[in-house]
Each structure stands twice: as C-alpha cells, then as structure tokens.
Image: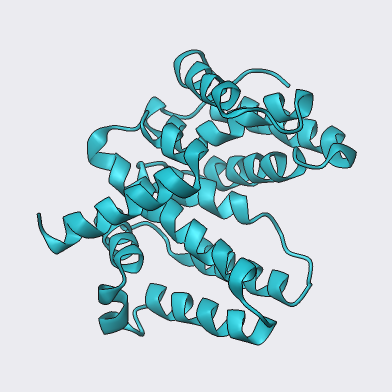
Length: 220
C-alpha cells in the first residue's frame, strides 16, 4: 500500500466512525471516486472538531489557519505529513476542483469560533463533493446552497418552513443533474425525514439515503 493509499484509508475510517450518514452516501459513488469523498468529509470533520476542542477562539483560529495554509500550498511538508490534508490535496488535484469553497468553509468556521454569524458550511461540502464527482455548471452552486441551508435548517423546528422552501428548490434542481453527481447530494435526502422526526435513528437515515439513491429525492 502506497502512502497515498494509506492516507485515503485513514480518511475512510475517520468518516465511517465520525459521519455515518456521509459514509453510507459515499458508498453509492463509484469505487474509484469514493475515496475522494472520504478525503473531503474527513477534512470537514477535522475542521468542525476545532470548535469542539479549542479552549479559546484564538487557539482554534490558529488551527484553522493551518488548514487554510495547507489548502493553499503554503505548508507542503506539514500537509504531506497529515493523512487528511494529503488525501484532500490529492483528491482536489486529481479533479482540478476549485479550492475556494473549502477556504470559505474555513473562514465560516473561524467566524463561528468568535460567535459571529456564518453562512451554511454544508453548502460548501455539497458543492465540493459534487465537483469531485465531475459536476459542473452554473446551477451546481445554487443547488448546493439550497441543499446546505435545508440540511442546516431542518435541525431547528422554528426554521422548518424555510428548510422546506430551500429543499423544494434543491429537489427541482437536482433532478436535472447527471446520475454521477447524485451521491454528493444524498445526505440532503435526510431533510424530509428530519422534518418529521427531529432525531431519527440510524436505520431510518440509512433507508432514506438508499431510497434517494435508487428512486430519487422525496418531497418534503
């Protein structure tokens, strides 16, 4: 096993243990593409964890700056030594995917550290995942934003009406995308389930993901 293979395998384990929904959604992507998604989702977990473990905002901001530097190529040696950074860098390079959404994600996580309002982090994850699977076009960022906002707002009962609006727009848009891109958006299929059940068990979430992959995204 090469160093790159080990890095991607590390990411797969991290996502399987830390983000079961996205791990299962990734299994509907072709095997050759799947590891790119694992690298992205591992990066999402690592940057989200900064907020949970940082004792003060500045310490977290320093860690997030490291991730930004790794993405922009300013710490090549240190990035190569990090399995998540190395795998993500390889995935982005293989597909020539735009790194700007992930830099925006880092900036939004930095804002959250300091108690500032931030846009949907999930939107950047959806967009980059779709691009890693070959997605392109002007409709993609708009659909990713609606998917991200619906995904976020579905967690808050007071925002369910807005979640439905964003999900309806996303659902209309995603029906026009090629099948290869769909696995990137499968976690958004959990929105209708969350609107009915605030904390659905894993088996219900797994069924929702599979149904969306096989039959399309349900209405909310």
